Image 1 (cartoon, protein in one colour):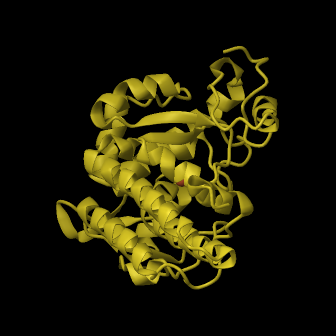
Image 2: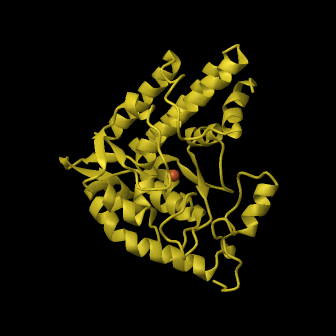
Length: 307
Ligand SMILES: [Fe+2]
């Protein structure tokens, strides 16, 4: 690796800025641009989290790490990851330039493409980063995608988003349509957050104990242990009615986490979420985070040309 490579550091990568300026969401992974410092950041992140994974991660996640043959010493090439991943669940990691509007994201996972960030955080700030990076996306998310049951949960989210988009497209009044879709996006984003990103699960081999399957936790050296051990964290059984009305903040450790029984349980809750969307139970959820922006709204409304 040439030390003179410009780097693909989060928020500091000219390659990414150019792609965004051109409006490109889907990009290549220009591997030669990673600097030696970027590679060193991956090595450090991986080495320090590995023992935490062994202690706290869901067994299917650890199996996924082995199945993907993740290399502790260098940033993975997405095409190598996909050679191992695709035969298992037909999922693929697909490089993106950054933020993906809500519907585009859900529709991608419906088609078993996972929008994947290729930049890596600044080595000077290993711990806190508000935006995803390749360590979060590939080391935190992708190992779970090797499990067929988990993969089906993701696809189910995408299907729920699609049927929600058609439902709101049928609402005649424009203001009501926009209000409804905003609320549904909030409900879906909250449910995704408290399961796929920050979910805890009963240990398959001992349901009296907990493990972690949420990727936000699995890619956080500090919060992984904290989520299971810290007495101040509130941990409750996964409840749809609570989760869709519960705001969250992304800039500190989560004070409240939800426990699922199994991946089957999460899958059936996503089915219930879709049913609730159609029954109007997600059309007026409690206000608060996450913020739904214009692009998120438009992405849903454009599906039926009702933007
Ligand atoms: Fe994530």
